[in-house]
Amino acid sequence: MSLSQIHTPSARALPIQAETTNQPASGASFADLPLDWENAYATSYHVDVSVDAKHWSTVFRTVTGKGGVRDIPVRPTPARYVRMYGTERNTQYGYSLKEFEVR
Image 1 (cartoon, one colour):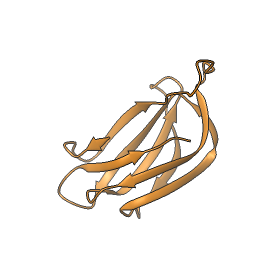
Image 2 (cartoon, rainbow, N blue to C red):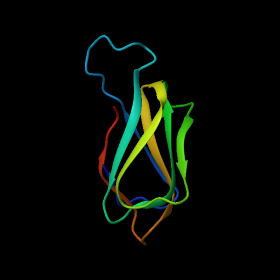
Image 3 (cartoon, rainbow, N blue to C red):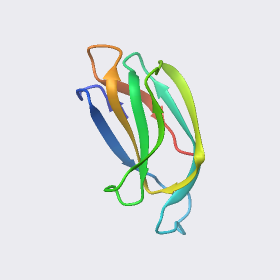
């Protein structure tokens, strides 16, 4: 996912794909969110989850973000959607993630 054309603050919600077709209505449960940032990373952002893409709960927040791989452990959380909500960039460009994994 590349958010390089989006201005601060910005968010991108992604549906979480279950590995089975027997996914419960509340979504998949996960406990780890690895983010792999490119050179245009967020210095301040939060990661939110939702079961309906309307009501969001923050599972991680930082104001000291750095580039590279960031492994974010969270309490096991059921969700169907996840988003990175960037509030401050390290460059004049947008946000750029090589990988945003949910596991």
